[in-house]
Image (cartoon, rainbow over all chains, first blue to last red; front, side, top):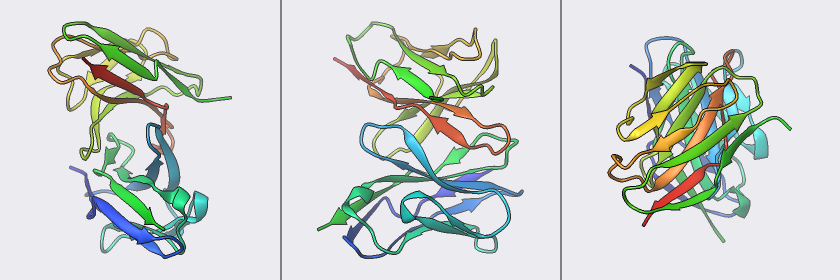
Length: 112
Length: 112
């Protein structure tokens, strides 16, 4: 069975500092990986996705993630955060034949 | 503009009343999903439908019901049997090629 672990429930970071949100998954087959962002009282929006090919994936709003098969990780990074990045971030995995599985989310707090 | 429309955005209900949340999509996706979101618990799957006139229970289906009479529509009824219905409800569809989920803006249900 697939599972997703987001290691940090909350991450505080100063504005213009770099950030990394961690995500580890378990799956016995090839996977597709996603990061979604949720602003307060809104639905989830796709930040980026890994389907195949290059392990470094670039997304919207300056975010990127690296797929590491040996460590079963898909950490999300941004070199310089802005106050507008304050949101909750969800990592998700699917193998296409099964339902998509979400992590419990990481709240990113941007400090002035 | 293609997308998923959920209504109402906010809904208040008295205990013992059923309430129906609407979800309409024009993305021409076959699969549709309902998730429940509570603080700190991520997204939990209530029901999903992969084709018209067919649907399956998710992880927390008790106290909920759905129908899928049209490809575009997947309404969710929160019945009086649902013991703790106050939550944020999200409807989604899937791109069959990638497994990527597309979300509506959500409906917040509060039971008074």
